Image (tube, rainbow, N blue to C red):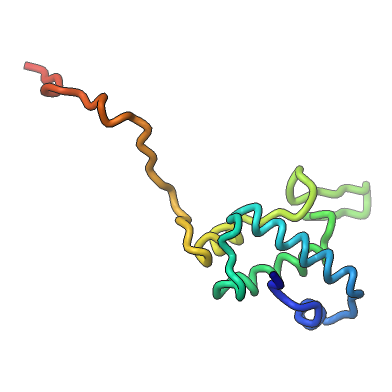
Length: 126
């Protein structure tokens, strides 16, 4: 499944890229998106998925180390996350989950078996 073409990525970044760079950025992006929503991305992708994938791939090529800030004097570098690799931001996760039809907010999970429903009246003070 192709979420975007190498030419789309080159056009977005406005600079020349080799085919292997484009393929690697695409594969890492697909892996990150599938890691979040599994096989729910359709072919062609749902509205919103392509633009999200292009933004993630552009970030992979522009800032592969995930550097948040640098400082020359004293050599200080801070990273966006302690983990390495392609990571989705919270906003990107929400947008992706919404695009593929998954819930994006908090949910409720009832793990109590139906047979253990209390019988009787609740305790009352008199």
